[in-house]
Image 1 (cartoon, rainbow, N blue to C red):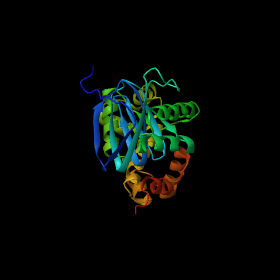
Image 2: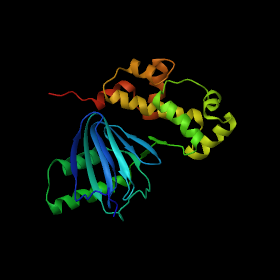
Image 3: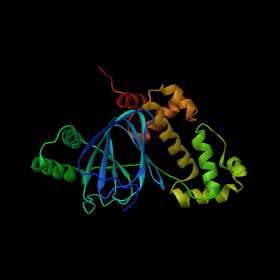
Image 4: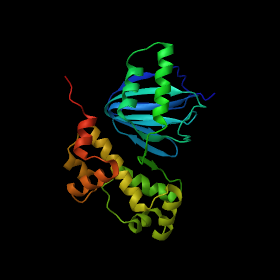
Length: 251
């Protein structure tokens, strides 16, 4: 057994402070992770998945991963046996959550309904999971040393506007070589990868309550309107609505 394997026996409810982390671990069961508020980052050696509020991440059994909260985050989780994988996923995946699945998660993580009713509710949740959509909210991390040099620089400063050719001079590789490697290792072109990185950074900042115009500048978008349009196309909502959903009013 992995020395960082956690033993999970049922649904959990775990509030996380802004920036709080759950260190790298795995479990023998599949896990459905749902942030009721805030935003949750799921990281593996292969990449990073951002899980907005009212979305969920499916984390397969025995996949080492870590969590990080962006903004005050209410993390709720369900577990399923390793052999029970309705979407046949072998890596973390962000999923849409419909109103029924949302209510099932809430019911299972708010109070213990008793073994029989819990099994029934979990079965209905599995049925809903067979129909949900996968969302393109992952960022695969490259492994080539030259690409990781570039990726690290852009992660440290998403507003860095240098071209791939200029970044390549720092990394010691030609633009054509780097462009080919980005496609091979991440499944994206370099512009697509950089846009995804910027969107993930934007989601994290919005979850902490930052203003839309501030986030647009910090993430390297030419104008707030360009940021809003890119965000809307990628996530199906505006940055303002996303910010409000990640920061519900209290009291």
